[in-house]
Image (tube, rainbow, N blue to C red; front, side, top):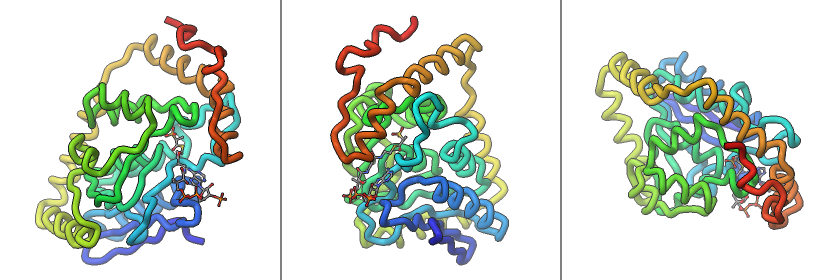
Amino acid sequence: MDHVLTDLNGGIGVITLNNTARRNCLSEAMLNGIEQSIQRLVASGARAIILRAPKGSKVWSAGFDIRELPDPGIDPLGYNDDLATALRAVQNCPVPVIAMIEGSVWGGACDLAVTCDMAIGTPTTTFAITPAKLGVPYTTTGLMRFIGAMPMHIVKELFFTAQPISAERARELGLLNHLVDGEELEAFTLALVARILDNSPLAISVLKEQLRVLGNSYSMSPETQERIQGLRRMVYQSPDYGEGKAAFVEKRKPVFPSSQGAGQPGSAPQ
Ligand code: YXS
């Protein structure tokens, strides 16, 4: 089965997430499919790319494939792992990548939507940022993307509660550029892309790269980098991380050991 379908018409590439049975979860195959499709479409002359799920989907993407989360002790979201490389493929793509979103978006798929250059949703669109629900230490680049997209207290609410937010709230917060009726979504997105195609592709690709470089221009001391890595390692080596994945696979509510006194938050090194 092809985990993604691609199409190119009139300079507009379309990548369709195509694993409905597994709610388009971001498996290795799906993430590699996204990355390779972007490269193929750009090589074939795409001037913009739309990233979508099949029309009428209730779930745009259920996020990272939980069954593929590595065992405790291994960083589940490393720099060279599939999610990070797929997100960089979107960021480094020289043409705009537009997330056209119907249905719910979970976990790493929220980062995928935020990494796209724009996002257009419908009233069925929701976003749930889930690392805390699974005991996963999110990436620093991912956190910086959300901090860049929303005020800090909103970022904390979304990460700490791991609860879905509505399309209306997502638009208010800026996670969605536009919120349109489901029946208008395709026409609205294509009309927006047509405006982009009216303009200089060179100027747009340079603007996109300038904005990427400027958006990534944070300085961080070596000590801070090592402290963050140490904090993340505390989580992915913890019993909480193992419990999050086990609970999902066993289809039960997690009972995190740190809620039972193990590894009290205060033990994070200062
Ligand atoms: O039981 P079978 O084999 O039929 O498979 C089921 C689900 O196990 C599977 N599936 C997934 N498999 C791996 N990873 C996933 N994220 C995932 N989501 C779903 O798909 C089959 C159908 O799922 P089912 O029966 O639950 O569908 P539903 O329509 O009743 O519910 C749809 C969802 C999306 C509400 C539900 O599947 C769900 O809550 N999925 C998990 C959403 C989630 O917590 N995602 C976060 C993934 S972790 C992640 O992205 C990062 C590591 S982080 O957390 O750090 O951001």
